[in-house]
Structures are given as structure tokens and as C-alpha cells.
Amino acid sequence: MNPLTSVKGMRDILPPASEIWNQVEGAARRVFRRFNYREIRTPLLEETALFARGVGEETDIVSKEMYTFEDRDGSSLTLRPENTASVLRAYIEHRLDQQPGVQKLYYIGPMFRRERPQKGRYRQFYQIGAEAIGSDSPAVDAEVIALVLAILDEVGITGYELLINSVGSKESRARFNEALREQLKDVAPRMCADCRRRAETNPLRVLDCKVPEDQPIIDQLPSILEYLDSEDREHFRRVRELLDDLQIRYTVRPRLVRGLDYYARTTFEITHGALGAQNAILGGGRYDGLAEMLGSKVAAPGIGFSIGEDRLVMTVEQAHAVEAPPLDLYIAPMGDVASRHCLVLASEVRKLDLSVEVGTERKLKRMLELADKQGARYTLIVGDNEIATRSYTLKNMASGEQTTLTREGLLEHTQWLK
Ligand code: HAM
Image 1: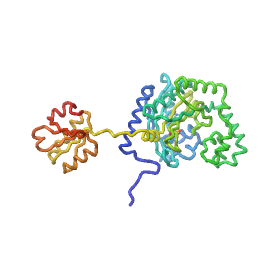
Image 2 (image 1 turned 135 degrees about the vertical axis):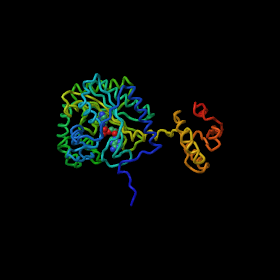
Image 3 (image 1 turned 90 degrees about the vertical axis):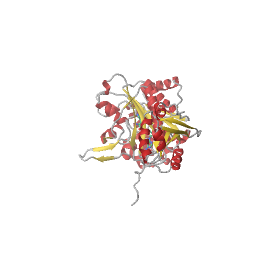
Image 4 (image 1 turned 45 degrees about the horizontal axis):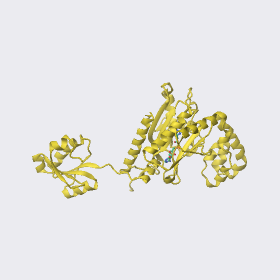
């Protein structure tokens, strides 16, 4: 019988790599606090209708990539492929619109999409994201983008590119969709099957097509920026003006319509050269109207982003080596009596907030080798003599220096730890 392995596209994150994940998440949480965002945790399972309505039936995510199954009571459930729709659902369900001010919420957790796995693309992947709900002010757009950049800065990433665009209001987009539909009448028959269908159902999604042969045709299609109404234009102008005030560099990319249907007005993405084909570290945008699509009676304009944490971690790994945290103390007990003694001793030392490992090998030499391999800063050898005299010899592994400490000297303060 072959041993079982993890499911395709899903992976284990082992130490020491898990350390980098924790560091990245810690950095993000620090920045979220500075921007006054608070954490929201939503379930991994939602009703399928939430994503069908929110993300859009014609998107790749909903039409091809969701893990959907029928529950025992016949209801259709889906493992969340993204979290914006869930956060909006929670916002509506718990009447967060009645709370004072813009609701600024962040999340960190796994998402599920059944895509073809490759470098930087997994079927279970992680996002660090945030949503600011309750305002359509361009100032919120600029602040959300500043927040994203502050996170990248906090984790030490440089060399990325910020791309921005506006996909306009629902009305502007409807006019653009009509124009696309017209143009696509002639060219769609030469395009892939998805494009031929989308040319009819949701022409905007043709712009997401990744098929290389279709790209020259897509390049000839009109730009959405030409279809913005005056309010959309003014909104976009003000967002750019505020980004300029913040000295944030960006490139306007009129093809950036993003692969989810809920976007309105500002959209953005950040790419990084170190990532290869899957080069988007994060994506985001405004979604005015999504709350109403999900059945809200009150408008809840909002904007947010999601960072692909797997890709962020990859970029951090490439930028600088991250060291595993050191082991403070390795205790080597010699014999069964000493083992019992050391278990208690270790639990006392841990109260000083130090990391302690107690050896389980029979041979002292082997334990000292292990202490060395685990990068222990100090070792303590404990035998019958030490127990009787209640004093221990502490060895500094870097310098080789040895000191004798009483039990009290070891436990009362950490002065011995240099
Ligand atoms: P998205 O562009 O679908 O947007 O995903 C955001 C990021 O998640 C991507 O830029 C990428 O880094 C990462 N990502 C997506 N799929 C995978 C995958 N299969 N494997 C690894 N990483 C992946 C959203 O999800 C929106 N909810 C963003 C948003 C929030 N818009 C407004 N608020």
C-alpha cells in the first residue's frame, strides 16, 4: 500500500518555512493596526449562491474553479474561493452599516480554487486581505493602496509595480460591454470557445482571456477608459491626485478589468518580477453595488484588496534568508532519575519565556550533537551529582565558556543568557 500524500495543489507548510509565514502575518497585523483595521473571521464554507451572485457566473472562478458540493440536506455549499463576498455577507447580516464610521476589516486565511497547479498557484492558497466598507470617497481608495504598500514595506519587499485602472460605474460598464459586443461580432468566431461564449454573455470577461492566440485580437478592442462617464472620470482623477500626494508611483493599465464581476471604478494590482508567470502578488478594487447584489437594502460602497500570501512569502524568501528562531537551552539528562528532574526544571525555565528542549537520548555525546544541530545557545548537563548539589554547569555553545549556576541562579533571572 502506498503511503497517502496531500491532495494535488494543496501543500504542507513545514518549519522553518512556517516561521516566515508567521513573520509575514505579524508584519501585516502591525500595519493593519496602524491603519485602524480590525480582524474578521468568516467561515470557509458558504452557500454557493453567495459567490455565484457576488463574483459572477461568467468568471473563471465561478464557472470552472469552485469546490462545490451538495450537503446532506440538499443545499449547495462552496469552499470560499475568495473572501470579499463573505465579508460583505457578514457586513449585511450583522448590520455593520449601523456601526459608526467606515468599517475597516482585515482577514488572513485559506481560499480554494481548482486551478491548474504551478509555481505560485495552488488549489488551497492563503490571502491577507482587507475591506473598507461604507464610503465611496477617493480618499479611501488612496488609503487602501497606501496600506498595501505599507505591508510590502514592512515585510521588506521592493521592486514591485503598481498598476491601476478604473472600470467605471455599472452604467459605464454596460455601455462598454455593448461596444465590446458590437466589436466582437466580427472577431469572436476566430477566438477560443470561452471568448465566443463570453462575447454574448459577458463581453468584459473576454479581456481576462489568457489564450496566446487571442491576445492580438484583444489588443485591438476598445479601452474601458473611453467609456467612463464624467463622475467616474472625476473619481479616478482624484484617486490619482491623492496617490501623487502620497508620492506613490503607479502605471495606468486600461486592460486591468480583474477577473471578478463585482468591481466598479478603481481596480489595482501589484506585480513582482521575481514571481515568474504568476506575477500578481495582490489584487483589489472598489465594489460599489456588490452589497445590493447580495440583497442589501442599504448601499455599502467599499474597496479592498487581497495579497496572495504564498506569493508574498516566495518573494520574501528570494529577497533575504530568514533565520529560524534559536533554541535558548538544551538540557541533557543522564539517566532516568535525571530525566524526571529535568522535566520539572524545563517547565520552570520556560516560565522565564525561554525555549527549552530536553534530550531523550541515552548517550550524552548524541545529545550534545543534537543540541548543536538545533542551534541551541546553551546546554545544561544534568546527572546525579547536579541533582544532589542543586547546581548545574551551563555551557555557552558559541564561546565554549562554562559557568556553574545554582538552581536559584538559573531560575530567578536570565542574566546568564547573554
Ligand atoms: P484575486 O485577484 O482573485 O482577487 O486574488 C488576489 C490574489 O490572490 C492574487 O493576486 C494572487 O496573488 C492570489 N491568488 C489567487 N489565486 C491564487 C492561487 N490559485 N494560488 C496562489 N495565489 C493565488 C481577490 O481574491 C479579491 N477578493 C481581491 C479583493 C478584495 N478585491 C476587493 N477586495
